[in-house]
Image 1 (tube, rainbow, N blue to C red):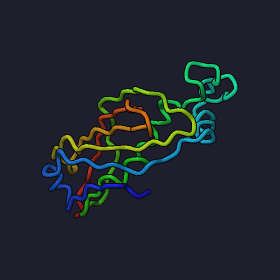
Image 2 (image 1 turned 90 degrees about the vertical axis):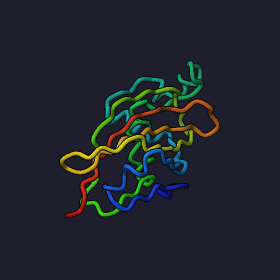
Image 3 (image 1 turned 30 degrees about the vertical axis):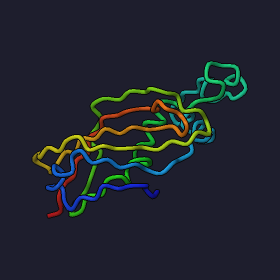
Image 4 (image 1 turned 180 degrees about the horizontal axis):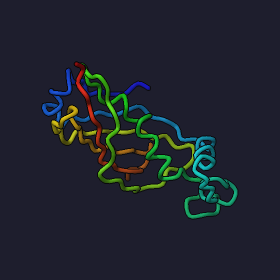
Length: 156
């Protein structure tokens, strides 16, 4: 996936200097096939996700992606937005807060914008805090906002 903008940082030690920077990713379509596959993987077959006929007369007028499906797309949507050099590895450290704000209708295009909000040196390397916002093409309110954490371990 190619980001429309990328934050490039020379090393984990330089992450603190990058706090406040933002980057936006490319659009990605969330199709019904993906929603159905997620329903199968999670055994969440609620009709608002998997029954287009019933959902057409439901509250959203169509099927919608599971909130956790949208959240699970963060690696796909945001991984190209921050590039840190001189690392042995980078890993997901978790989430501090997630809010699902707007349903993602099947067939919608979504993209992520990330803002680096903090960098803390820890024993293993540098823990980066970011706020990731997932937008829906043509919709003012975002699908979700998540405060994410990543650990960057410097190369030896």
